[in-house]
Image (cartoon, rainbow, N blue to C red):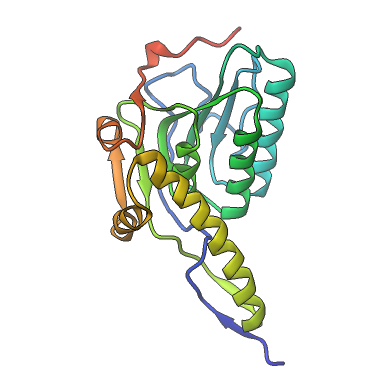
Length: 217
């Protein structure tokens, strides 16, 4: 069978957005200060960071951190998931979402600078969704490439589409709009900063730097 390459629209994200460290809360783990794009391990077992591209390694680290928070953290407190990410891949993103859903402690999401594409979907899975005043959420159409035998690609694409549709459906439900309405927004890219995100129900509230609990020294 002849092998061909076909570019298809599927759930591999190609957002090229800049992710600078947060200037609003200088004690937060800074994206620029990290030598790699891996998330910081929780210092107090109440916080987890998702900084950088959502990929397989990132997902495994975040899931492990959430598990540690459940085992070692204060069960009376929520887990704070800080997000500064241009997005990434659907499979790793859905792994993070499943860990959030299965967490015994509620997971609150905080967009500290950028939650784009897959990261915007993850933001929507927070039991409470916070955003800094100048942070930005961005939703857009999925895009990517696949290579291999056509029949094999069709099968992989179909299951990924089912998975992403489920993720999108929850996001639309949290925002209070239909899936079609969300996809209409995505078709032209939907950018929302701080108060805009709250007004359009993409976030529950703006949170200021002074509202963050300072980490233990």
